[in-house]
Image 1 (cartoon, rainbow, N blue to C red):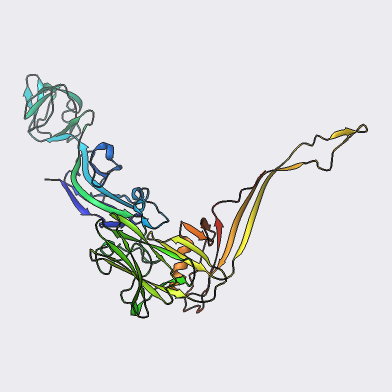
Image 2 (image 1 turned 180 degrees about the horizontal axis):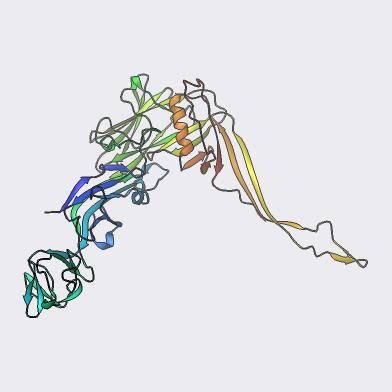
Length: 469
Protein backbone atom coordinates (compact mmCIF):
# COMPACT_ATOMS: atom_id res chain seq x y z
CA UNK A 1 0.00 0.00 0.00
CA UNK A 2 1.46 3.43 -0.94
CA UNK A 3 2.60 5.61 1.92
CA UNK A 4 1.88 8.71 -0.20
CA UNK A 5 -1.43 10.58 -0.06
CA UNK A 6 -2.33 13.17 -2.71
CA UNK A 7 -3.67 16.25 -0.94
CA UNK A 8 -4.11 18.51 -3.98
CA UNK A 9 -3.32 18.46 -7.69
CA UNK A 10 -4.01 20.75 -10.67
CA UNK A 11 -6.91 20.23 -13.06
CA UNK A 12 -6.65 18.00 -16.13
CA UNK A 13 -5.82 20.90 -18.49
CA UNK A 14 -3.93 23.90 -17.11
CA UNK A 15 -2.42 27.14 -18.46
CA UNK A 16 1.36 26.89 -18.23
CA UNK A 17 1.65 30.44 -16.86
CA UNK A 18 -0.62 29.82 -13.87
CA UNK A 19 0.50 27.98 -10.71
CA UNK A 20 0.58 24.21 -11.31
CA UNK A 21 0.99 22.93 -7.78
CA UNK A 22 1.06 19.40 -6.40
CA UNK A 23 0.66 18.83 -2.63
CA UNK A 24 1.23 15.39 -1.09
CA UNK A 25 1.66 13.78 2.31
CA UNK A 26 3.68 10.74 3.37
CA UNK A 27 3.66 8.58 6.49
CA UNK A 28 7.50 8.57 6.59
CA UNK A 29 7.85 12.36 6.70
CA UNK A 30 9.34 12.34 10.24
CA UNK A 31 12.24 10.08 9.26
CA UNK A 32 15.73 11.67 9.25
CA UNK A 33 16.80 13.21 5.96
CA UNK A 34 13.30 12.86 4.53
CA UNK A 35 12.56 14.41 1.12
CA UNK A 36 9.53 14.25 -1.13
CA UNK A 37 10.48 13.42 -4.74
CA UNK A 38 8.47 14.66 -7.74
CA UNK A 39 9.60 13.12 -11.05
CA UNK A 40 8.17 14.45 -14.33
CA UNK A 41 7.94 12.20 -17.41
CA UNK A 42 6.38 12.65 -20.86
CA UNK A 43 2.90 11.11 -20.90
CA UNK A 44 2.42 7.60 -22.29
CA UNK A 45 6.15 6.87 -22.12
CA UNK A 46 8.32 4.49 -20.11
CA UNK A 47 9.16 5.81 -16.67
CA UNK A 48 12.89 5.18 -16.96
CA UNK A 49 15.80 7.53 -16.05
CA UNK A 50 16.48 8.32 -19.71
CA UNK A 51 12.98 9.81 -20.07
CA UNK A 52 13.03 12.03 -16.97
CA UNK A 53 12.09 15.62 -17.85
CA UNK A 54 12.79 16.98 -14.36
CA UNK A 55 13.05 15.77 -10.79
CA UNK A 56 12.50 17.79 -7.61
CA UNK A 57 13.53 16.84 -4.06
CA UNK A 58 11.44 18.84 -1.61
CA UNK A 59 11.65 19.32 2.14
CA UNK A 60 8.40 18.98 4.09
CA UNK A 61 6.64 22.29 4.70
CA UNK A 62 7.27 23.37 8.29
CA UNK A 63 3.64 23.99 9.25
CA UNK A 64 2.02 20.89 7.71
CA UNK A 65 4.75 18.43 6.79
CA UNK A 66 3.34 18.26 3.28
CA UNK A 67 5.41 18.19 0.10
CA UNK A 68 4.54 21.08 -2.22
CA UNK A 69 5.89 21.63 -5.73
CA UNK A 70 4.86 24.15 -8.39
CA UNK A 71 6.00 22.94 -11.83
CA UNK A 72 4.70 25.91 -13.86
CA UNK A 73 8.20 27.24 -14.68
CA UNK A 74 9.13 23.86 -16.11
CA UNK A 75 5.94 23.65 -18.15
CA UNK A 76 6.48 27.15 -19.56
CA UNK A 77 9.77 25.97 -21.05
CA UNK A 78 8.00 23.05 -22.78
CA UNK A 79 5.34 25.02 -24.67
CA UNK A 80 5.58 27.79 -27.24
CA UNK A 81 3.47 29.55 -29.90
CA UNK A 82 2.90 29.06 -33.61
CA UNK A 83 1.46 31.79 -35.83
CA UNK A 84 -0.40 29.71 -38.37
CA UNK A 85 -3.60 27.74 -38.76
CA UNK A 86 -3.78 24.00 -38.25
CA UNK A 87 -2.21 21.72 -35.66
CA UNK A 88 -0.30 23.64 -32.97
CA UNK A 89 0.89 20.96 -30.57
CA UNK A 90 3.96 23.12 -29.92
CA UNK A 91 1.61 24.96 -27.55
CA UNK A 92 0.59 21.76 -25.73
CA UNK A 93 2.35 19.27 -23.48
CA UNK A 94 1.21 16.07 -21.78
CA UNK A 95 3.08 14.67 -18.79
CA UNK A 96 3.01 12.15 -15.93
CA UNK A 97 4.17 12.70 -12.36
CA UNK A 98 5.73 10.00 -10.19
CA UNK A 99 5.36 10.81 -6.49
CA UNK A 100 8.06 9.36 -4.28
CA UNK A 101 10.21 9.92 -1.23
CA UNK A 102 13.57 9.16 0.36
CA UNK A 103 15.01 9.12 3.87
CA UNK A 104 18.17 7.97 5.66
CA UNK A 105 18.08 4.26 6.53
CA UNK A 106 17.82 3.95 10.32
CA UNK A 107 16.26 2.03 13.18
CA UNK A 108 15.07 3.13 16.63
CA UNK A 109 15.86 0.43 19.18
CA UNK A 110 14.03 0.30 22.51
CA UNK A 111 14.96 -3.14 23.85
CA UNK A 112 17.54 -3.32 26.64
CA UNK A 113 21.15 -3.77 25.58
CA UNK A 114 22.66 -7.23 26.14
CA UNK A 115 26.14 -8.74 26.31
CA UNK A 116 27.62 -10.74 23.44
CA UNK A 117 30.92 -12.14 24.61
CA UNK A 118 32.90 -8.99 25.46
CA UNK A 119 30.83 -6.64 23.27
CA UNK A 120 27.42 -4.95 23.20
CA UNK A 121 24.41 -6.46 21.42
CA UNK A 122 21.37 -4.51 20.13
CA UNK A 123 18.05 -6.27 19.50
CA UNK A 124 15.81 -5.14 16.61
CA UNK A 125 13.59 -7.19 14.32
CA UNK A 126 14.73 -7.24 10.66
CA UNK A 127 17.31 -4.49 11.15
CA UNK A 128 19.14 -5.07 7.84
CA UNK A 129 22.71 -4.53 9.08
CA UNK A 130 25.49 -6.92 8.07
CA UNK A 131 28.95 -7.77 9.45
CA UNK A 132 31.42 -5.07 8.48
CA UNK A 133 28.87 -2.26 8.15
CA UNK A 134 29.94 1.06 9.62
CA UNK A 135 27.11 2.48 11.73
CA UNK A 136 26.33 5.69 13.58
CA UNK A 137 24.65 5.34 16.98
CA UNK A 138 22.87 8.28 18.58
CA UNK A 139 21.42 7.65 22.05
CA UNK A 140 18.40 9.32 23.55
CA UNK A 141 20.47 10.99 26.28
CA UNK A 142 23.23 12.07 23.88
CA UNK A 143 25.68 9.52 25.24
CA UNK A 144 25.77 10.73 28.85
CA UNK A 145 25.20 7.31 30.41
CA UNK A 146 27.04 5.23 27.79
CA UNK A 147 29.59 7.55 26.14
CA UNK A 148 31.52 4.69 24.49
CA UNK A 149 28.39 3.61 22.55
CA UNK A 150 27.78 7.08 21.12
CA UNK A 151 29.14 7.70 17.60
CA UNK A 152 30.70 5.58 14.82
CA UNK A 153 31.16 1.81 15.24
CA UNK A 154 31.49 -1.42 13.25
CA UNK A 155 29.03 -4.33 13.15
CA UNK A 156 30.95 -7.48 14.14
CA UNK A 157 28.00 -9.88 14.33
CA UNK A 158 24.57 -9.84 12.69
CA UNK A 159 21.56 -12.14 12.91
CA UNK A 160 17.98 -11.63 11.71
CA UNK A 161 16.78 -9.81 14.81
CA UNK A 162 19.92 -8.53 16.56
CA UNK A 163 23.45 -7.35 15.87
CA UNK A 164 26.65 -6.67 17.82
CA UNK A 165 28.91 -3.63 17.60
CA UNK A 166 32.57 -3.29 18.67
CA UNK A 167 31.79 -1.57 21.97
CA UNK A 168 33.02 -3.31 25.16
CA UNK A 169 30.20 -4.39 27.42
CA UNK A 170 32.21 -3.19 30.39
CA UNK A 171 31.67 0.42 29.24
CA UNK A 172 27.87 0.16 29.41
CA UNK A 173 26.42 1.65 32.60
CA UNK A 174 22.69 1.87 31.65
CA UNK A 175 21.24 -0.87 29.41
CA UNK A 176 17.81 0.82 29.09
CA UNK A 177 18.84 3.94 27.16
CA UNK A 178 17.06 3.95 23.78
CA UNK A 179 18.90 4.91 20.60
CA UNK A 180 18.94 5.33 16.84
CA UNK A 181 21.26 3.45 14.45
CA UNK A 182 21.98 4.50 10.86
CA UNK A 183 24.64 3.71 8.28
CA UNK A 184 27.79 5.82 8.56
CA UNK A 185 27.60 6.68 4.83
CA UNK A 186 24.01 7.95 5.33
CA UNK A 187 22.64 5.63 2.66
CA UNK A 188 18.98 6.09 1.95
CA UNK A 189 15.77 4.26 1.30
CA UNK A 190 14.39 5.70 -1.93
CA UNK A 191 11.02 5.05 -3.58
CA UNK A 192 10.44 7.04 -6.78
CA UNK A 193 7.04 5.66 -7.84
CA UNK A 194 5.05 5.31 -4.63
CA UNK A 195 2.07 6.98 -6.36
CA UNK A 196 1.43 8.01 -9.96
CA UNK A 197 -0.50 10.79 -11.69
CA UNK A 198 -0.92 10.38 -15.45
CA UNK A 199 -1.92 12.33 -18.56
CA UNK A 200 -1.94 15.86 -17.23
CA UNK A 201 -1.93 18.62 -19.87
CA UNK A 202 -0.69 22.20 -20.12
CA UNK A 203 -1.00 24.81 -22.86
CA UNK A 204 0.68 28.11 -23.66
CA UNK A 205 -1.75 30.34 -21.80
CA UNK A 206 -2.34 32.45 -18.71
CA UNK A 207 -5.84 32.50 -17.21
CA UNK A 208 -7.04 35.54 -15.33
CA UNK A 209 -10.28 37.17 -14.25
CA UNK A 210 -8.77 40.58 -14.94
CA UNK A 211 -6.68 42.89 -12.81
CA UNK A 212 -8.53 42.04 -9.62
CA UNK A 213 -8.03 38.29 -9.22
CA UNK A 214 -6.29 35.44 -10.98
CA UNK A 215 -9.06 32.94 -10.39
CA UNK A 216 -9.14 29.15 -10.62
CA UNK A 217 -9.03 27.76 -14.12
CA UNK A 218 -12.39 26.10 -15.02
CA UNK A 219 -10.79 23.26 -16.96
CA UNK A 220 -14.05 21.42 -17.75
CA UNK A 221 -15.19 24.30 -19.96
CA UNK A 222 -12.04 24.12 -22.09
CA UNK A 223 -11.65 20.38 -22.68
CA UNK A 224 -13.71 20.54 -25.86
CA UNK A 225 -16.32 17.92 -25.03
CA UNK A 226 -19.44 19.96 -24.24
CA UNK A 227 -21.95 22.38 -25.79
CA UNK A 228 -20.98 25.13 -25.30
CA UNK A 229 -17.22 24.63 -25.07
CA UNK A 230 -14.69 27.42 -24.63
CA UNK A 231 -11.73 27.76 -26.97
CA UNK A 232 -8.32 28.59 -25.52
CA UNK A 233 -8.77 32.29 -26.13
CA UNK A 234 -9.63 35.41 -24.15
CA UNK A 235 -12.40 36.31 -26.64
CA UNK A 236 -15.79 36.67 -24.98
CA UNK A 237 -18.12 33.69 -25.34
CA UNK A 238 -21.91 33.91 -25.50
CA UNK A 239 -24.55 31.29 -26.17
CA UNK A 240 -27.35 32.97 -28.14
CA UNK A 241 -26.78 34.96 -31.30
CA UNK A 242 -29.67 37.26 -30.38
CA UNK A 243 -27.85 38.35 -27.22
CA UNK A 244 -24.34 38.40 -28.61
CA UNK A 245 -22.09 40.63 -26.55
CA UNK A 246 -18.35 41.05 -26.19
CA UNK A 247 -17.91 40.64 -29.94
CA UNK A 248 -14.53 41.27 -31.53
CA UNK A 249 -14.38 43.36 -34.70
CA UNK A 250 -13.78 42.55 -38.35
CA UNK A 251 -13.17 45.45 -40.72
CA UNK A 252 -15.23 45.16 -43.91
CA UNK A 253 -13.02 44.33 -46.89
CA UNK A 254 -9.87 43.81 -44.86
CA UNK A 255 -7.54 40.84 -44.44
CA UNK A 256 -8.39 40.37 -40.77
CA UNK A 257 -7.98 36.91 -39.34
CA UNK A 258 -8.37 35.27 -35.97
CA UNK A 259 -6.71 31.98 -35.06
CA UNK A 260 -8.91 30.35 -32.41
CA UNK A 261 -7.07 27.58 -30.56
CA UNK A 262 -9.17 24.65 -29.32
CA UNK A 263 -8.54 21.37 -27.53
CA UNK A 264 -9.30 18.74 -30.15
CA UNK A 265 -9.25 14.96 -30.39
CA UNK A 266 -8.14 12.38 -32.95
CA UNK A 267 -10.97 10.70 -34.86
CA UNK A 268 -13.31 13.67 -34.41
CA UNK A 269 -14.41 15.73 -37.42
CA UNK A 270 -14.80 19.43 -36.71
CA UNK A 271 -16.93 21.69 -38.93
CA UNK A 272 -16.28 25.44 -38.93
CA UNK A 273 -19.60 27.08 -39.83
CA UNK A 274 -20.16 30.79 -40.53
CA UNK A 275 -23.61 32.16 -39.72
CA UNK A 276 -25.21 35.53 -40.43
CA UNK A 277 -26.60 36.87 -37.16
CA UNK A 278 -29.37 38.69 -39.02
CA UNK A 279 -31.22 35.46 -39.79
CA UNK A 280 -28.87 32.65 -38.72
CA UNK A 281 -28.31 31.75 -42.36
CA UNK A 282 -25.39 29.43 -43.01
CA UNK A 283 -22.88 31.32 -45.16
CA UNK A 284 -20.22 28.64 -45.68
CA UNK A 285 -18.36 25.92 -43.79
CA UNK A 286 -15.09 23.98 -43.65
CA UNK A 287 -14.27 20.52 -42.30
CA UNK A 288 -11.18 19.74 -40.24
CA UNK A 289 -9.85 16.37 -39.03
CA UNK A 290 -7.05 17.23 -36.58
CA UNK A 291 -4.82 15.00 -34.52
CA UNK A 292 -5.09 14.86 -30.74
CA UNK A 293 -3.93 18.10 -29.11
CA UNK A 294 -4.46 21.76 -29.99
CA UNK A 295 -5.66 23.19 -33.29
CA UNK A 296 -5.83 26.76 -34.63
CA UNK A 297 -9.09 27.33 -36.52
CA UNK A 298 -8.73 30.29 -38.88
CA UNK A 299 -11.63 32.75 -38.93
CA UNK A 300 -11.35 35.14 -41.89
CA UNK A 301 -13.46 37.77 -43.63
CA UNK A 302 -15.25 36.71 -46.81
CA UNK A 303 -17.20 38.82 -49.31
CA UNK A 304 -20.30 36.81 -48.41
CA UNK A 305 -20.19 38.46 -44.99
CA UNK A 306 -22.15 41.73 -45.09
CA UNK A 307 -23.44 41.84 -41.51
CA UNK A 308 -22.34 40.84 -38.04
CA UNK A 309 -21.72 37.11 -37.92
CA UNK A 310 -20.78 34.24 -35.66
CA UNK A 311 -18.85 31.02 -36.13
CA UNK A 312 -19.52 27.60 -34.69
CA UNK A 313 -16.81 24.97 -34.49
CA UNK A 314 -18.82 21.78 -34.10
CA UNK A 315 -17.24 18.43 -33.35
CA UNK A 316 -19.04 15.13 -33.80
CA UNK A 317 -18.06 14.34 -30.19
CA UNK A 318 -20.71 16.82 -29.00
CA UNK A 319 -18.46 19.88 -28.64
CA UNK A 320 -19.57 23.29 -29.91
CA UNK A 321 -17.34 26.38 -29.78
CA UNK A 322 -19.24 29.57 -30.64
CA UNK A 323 -17.82 33.09 -31.13
CA UNK A 324 -19.31 36.35 -32.39
CA UNK A 325 -17.86 39.13 -34.52
CA UNK A 326 -19.04 42.60 -35.46
CA UNK A 327 -18.49 43.80 -39.02
CA UNK A 328 -17.12 47.34 -39.05
CA UNK A 329 -18.33 49.10 -42.22
CA UNK A 330 -17.05 52.59 -41.42
CA UNK A 331 -14.83 54.47 -43.85
CA UNK A 332 -11.22 53.33 -43.68
CA UNK A 333 -8.08 55.38 -44.32
CA UNK A 334 -5.61 52.51 -43.71
CA UNK A 335 -6.02 48.75 -43.48
CA UNK A 336 -3.24 48.37 -40.89
CA UNK A 337 -3.66 45.30 -38.70
CA UNK A 338 -1.79 43.97 -35.69
CA UNK A 339 -2.15 40.27 -34.90
CA UNK A 340 -1.24 39.43 -31.33
CA UNK A 341 -0.95 36.38 -29.09
CA UNK A 342 -3.71 36.67 -26.52
CA UNK A 343 -3.42 35.58 -22.90
CA UNK A 344 -4.80 32.11 -23.55
CA UNK A 345 -2.70 31.27 -26.61
CA UNK A 346 -4.96 32.16 -29.55
CA UNK A 347 -4.25 34.92 -32.08
CA UNK A 348 -6.50 37.97 -32.20
CA UNK A 349 -6.15 41.10 -34.28
CA UNK A 350 -6.73 44.80 -33.96
CA UNK A 351 -7.42 47.09 -36.90
CA UNK A 352 -5.96 50.61 -37.11
CA UNK A 353 -8.17 52.35 -39.63
CA UNK A 354 -7.11 55.98 -39.27
CA UNK A 355 -3.90 57.72 -40.27
CA UNK A 356 -0.57 55.93 -39.97
CA UNK A 357 2.73 57.75 -39.56
CA UNK A 358 6.04 56.08 -40.38
CA UNK A 359 9.22 57.23 -38.67
CA UNK A 360 12.82 56.09 -38.53
CA UNK A 361 15.53 56.32 -35.92
CA UNK A 362 19.15 56.50 -37.06
CA UNK A 363 22.20 55.65 -34.98
CA UNK A 364 25.77 56.14 -36.18
CA UNK A 365 29.03 54.92 -34.71
CA UNK A 366 32.09 57.00 -35.69
CA UNK A 367 35.72 57.58 -34.85
CA UNK A 368 38.14 60.42 -35.63
CA UNK A 369 40.86 58.99 -37.84
CA UNK A 370 44.33 60.31 -38.71
CA UNK A 371 44.58 62.36 -41.93
CA UNK A 372 47.69 61.46 -43.92
CA UNK A 373 47.62 64.46 -46.30
CA UNK A 374 50.49 65.22 -48.64
CA UNK A 375 53.38 67.69 -49.21
CA UNK A 376 52.78 70.44 -51.74
CA UNK A 377 55.29 73.25 -52.38
CA UNK A 378 57.21 72.25 -49.21
CA UNK A 379 54.03 72.47 -47.12
CA UNK A 380 51.75 69.79 -45.69
CA UNK A 381 48.28 69.88 -47.22
CA UNK A 382 45.21 67.70 -47.57
CA UNK A 383 42.50 67.45 -50.19
CA UNK A 384 38.89 68.54 -49.84
CA UNK A 385 37.83 64.85 -49.76
CA UNK A 386 39.96 64.12 -46.68
CA UNK A 387 38.02 62.30 -43.97
CA UNK A 388 38.54 62.82 -40.27
CA UNK A 389 35.30 61.62 -38.67
CA UNK A 390 34.63 58.21 -40.22
CA UNK A 391 31.32 56.38 -39.86
CA UNK A 392 31.82 52.65 -39.51
CA UNK A 393 28.35 51.50 -38.48
CA UNK A 394 24.90 52.91 -39.29
CA UNK A 395 21.62 51.46 -38.04
CA UNK A 396 18.09 52.42 -39.02
CA UNK A 397 15.04 51.22 -37.06
CA UNK A 398 11.54 51.91 -38.30
CA UNK A 399 8.53 52.73 -36.17
CA UNK A 400 4.88 53.17 -37.08
CA UNK A 401 2.35 55.29 -35.22
CA UNK A 402 -1.03 53.58 -35.65
CA UNK A 403 -4.44 54.99 -34.75
CA UNK A 404 -7.66 53.11 -34.08
CA UNK A 405 -11.18 54.15 -34.93
CA UNK A 406 -13.73 54.79 -32.19
CA UNK A 407 -14.40 51.62 -30.21
CA UNK A 408 -16.70 50.16 -27.57
CA UNK A 409 -15.76 49.09 -24.04
CA UNK A 410 -15.06 45.47 -24.95
CA UNK A 411 -12.58 46.37 -27.67
CA UNK A 412 -11.03 48.97 -25.38
CA UNK A 413 -10.35 46.12 -22.95
CA UNK A 414 -8.90 44.03 -25.77
CA UNK A 415 -6.57 46.90 -26.66
CA UNK A 416 -4.71 46.70 -23.35
CA UNK A 417 -4.20 42.98 -23.99
CA UNK A 418 -2.58 43.93 -27.31
CA UNK A 419 -0.25 46.35 -25.51
CA UNK A 420 0.94 43.63 -23.12
CA UNK A 421 1.21 40.79 -25.65
CA UNK A 422 4.74 39.32 -25.97
CA UNK A 423 4.24 38.35 -29.66
CA UNK A 424 2.86 40.80 -32.23
CA UNK A 425 2.84 40.76 -36.05
CA UNK A 426 2.13 43.78 -38.28
CA UNK A 427 0.28 43.06 -41.53
CA UNK A 428 1.35 45.48 -44.26
CA UNK A 429 -1.14 44.23 -46.84
CA UNK A 430 1.23 41.60 -48.21
CA UNK A 431 3.38 40.17 -45.42
CA UNK A 432 3.20 39.65 -41.69
CA UNK A 433 6.18 41.34 -40.05
CA UNK A 434 7.31 40.75 -36.46
CA UNK A 435 7.23 43.86 -34.30
CA UNK A 436 7.26 45.02 -30.71
CA UNK A 437 4.96 47.44 -28.93
CA UNK A 438 6.78 50.55 -27.73
CA UNK A 439 4.30 51.36 -24.95
CA UNK A 440 5.50 51.01 -21.35
CA UNK A 441 2.16 51.93 -19.76
CA UNK A 442 -1.49 52.37 -20.66
CA UNK A 443 -4.82 53.73 -19.55
CA UNK A 444 -7.80 51.46 -20.01
CA UNK A 445 -10.55 53.93 -20.85
CA UNK A 446 -14.06 53.28 -19.55
CA UNK A 447 -17.14 54.42 -21.38
CA UNK A 448 -18.68 55.73 -18.16
CA UNK A 449 -15.77 58.17 -17.99
CA UNK A 450 -15.22 58.71 -21.70
CA UNK A 451 -18.04 57.92 -24.12
CA UNK A 452 -15.88 58.08 -27.25
CA UNK A 453 -12.81 55.85 -26.95
CA UNK A 454 -9.94 55.96 -29.41
CA UNK A 455 -6.41 54.68 -28.97
CA UNK A 456 -3.02 54.90 -30.66
CA UNK A 457 0.09 52.77 -30.46
CA UNK A 458 3.68 52.94 -31.65
CA UNK A 459 5.27 49.76 -32.95
CA UNK A 460 8.87 49.03 -33.83
CA UNK A 461 9.66 46.51 -36.54
CA UNK A 462 11.73 43.63 -35.21
CA UNK A 463 14.23 43.75 -38.10
CA UNK A 464 16.38 46.81 -38.76
CA UNK A 465 16.91 48.09 -42.31
CA UNK A 466 20.34 46.91 -43.54
CA UNK A 467 22.78 49.73 -44.42
CA UNK A 468 25.89 49.28 -46.56
CA UNK A 469 29.24 50.70 -45.44
